[in-house]
View 1 (cartoon, rainbow, N blue to C red):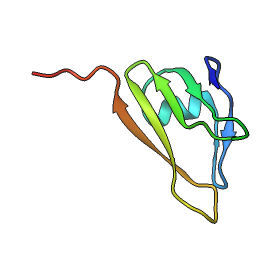
View 2: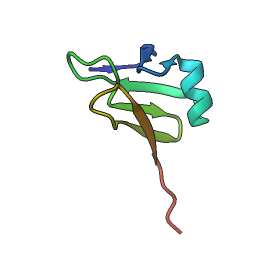
View 3: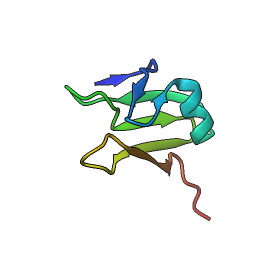
Length: 75
């Protein structure tokens, strides 16, 4: 489900508020995609990036953010 309002989510190590996320990524939040029956978003859109939220631990709930430029400039 695509939502345009921030939904706070948590891992085993940290709770991510909109302010925390924007500080980590360095860009303002726009929208997020959360799959049905999931607590953590799969993708988060900011002004300049699409952020892929990757789960990297099977035992603990741990994530990392992969920033992909939304509008890459080709020279």
